[in-house]
Image (cartoon, rainbow, N blue to C red; front, top):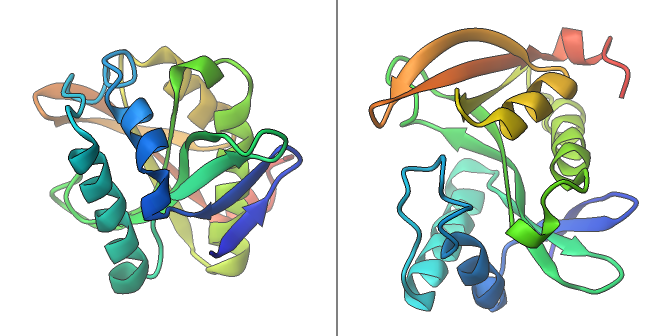
Length: 179
């Protein structure tokens, strides 16, 4: 098992097939999927397929989302991290910052903490020049987090018939950002 980053409270490690219960708890929750097309998964087989796809991304793209594991309880909190995104924006591919937490962990600063660690990894370990992110315009919490950690609102685009904000952060601006 590879641990990519350790924060004060969490281990950010590769997703494993053993995470299927946690992934099912996360992605079967309709509230978690409110701004993700309102299509929560229905089975543990679907959760396992998500994990297998992310593991494929590790091999094929060199990066994929990471499990967030609480260091005190060893609980699966959700996922965070970067992935190489080729479908969301039709006009270009990019390294995408994302996070998704189980509902009981919302509002505790976890997305902010792990997203900052993901940016640091992307800029310092992967030596990326730029990292992007998108959020549904109605998803106030996610938009607030992206702005708080230094990403800049660039424009608006439509994905799945819904308006989304497009954010970007260049490595040169990250170096100036107080974290």
